[in-house]
Image (tube, rainbow, N blue to C red; front, top):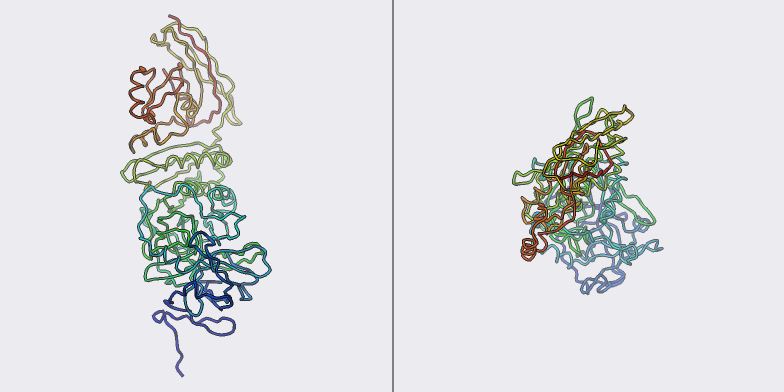
Length: 591
């Protein structure tokens, strides 16, 4: 007796459904909305566990015309299958194809109501999915990204998109919880319930994910769209609606409403479904990169099988006081809001998710941001133990975002490297005294500044600095300021954030980013009050009014006037320590 064995070549799948066997429609024609009638039977294909799609039964209730806007209707079906009637439409089923009379009708996409006694769901019509698929698949310009993530429907909306399950992999629960508010603020409800296979970590040296050898996709297959791949993974899992050659359409609703996009398409393996009266959810492992999502629109996402998009390669290196160094490696999409948060989560994982006792004393965090044109930005920051980093997390993310954003050239960083070096002692100090030997002085004389402090749980220390009074300072009323580098930057007219309009080139942008004073230690400076006229953040003191009028008339945004202090002399003291005090002392230089 010969057994019939279906093959991938025949594109036929035999699965048990309600006690019988049903063949999944292949290359099915589209059934027009006008031919859908209440009471028609249909079936929806999705993955309940593993990677094989299974059907479940539905019954057409009707079509809500223009439900999502002019020309954007919604097919409403009752979920008659006993399994699905108990759990309702599941987050992660987004995009599951609906077939009626063997023809493709649409994709499961919206939850109609919560806590309903009879489960229903909304389906995006097939024609709307084709509209997204047929858009020209061009990658967005480098550096271009959405200013906000608007793909999440309001809790009060009668139609709630079955948002893809954004799962964080490679992060400890503590780190995932720490970043949950950060991701929620931009519309990503990321869960720690997720993981990734080793194949998901594969990427090339420039951060571009390599195409994996995953099981070929078909309608009903699980698919993930990643924002990060590698040792740290952030991906949203949904379902494939349609496969046309190498073109894949999925989800049936937007992911983040980016329009033109360049996001990794990944294989996915469903672990199970967690039923809930409020919102059931699939949990999944993200697999290898198998293509690129190029469209993120109202009705669906769409992309092409093959290689993944270019991404930013990230390395987080930890060199503990004892034991072997370790490195986290992952790749991140190019997005001004998402990119810095994912990078920061990797840094937090290296700091908070380790067993390194040395980090409790404090650590030095060095960052190197490398751009395509071989230009680099390098920074160093001291933190007094992991709690110091946790407290400054928002500030760190904002600073990293400012360094990554680049409105002047079509480029994102190629690679970002972080190095974490534990400190043997806590760098925080308490300032006990700062005084001047005299406050009125003649030119050529020496003023002694005495600085006294106590190390963290340590002994008292003292340093005396000689200030030789420059004859040019005669007749001026000056100040001697003791302040950390960041505070002195602000006092001397450098804004905390630089408006894009103030700069005119990528080189000026890099120069402005490099212009900060070191963040460790403390600065002593002799300053005088001045009116500073800035050109692309470069300051000139007391510029003639005629020059200012001409310059500002030519370009109002580029030139600014700020009232600030002008350093006449300054010195960096006690590098490797953290001071948090600002002290100002008057100094009068006689004629």
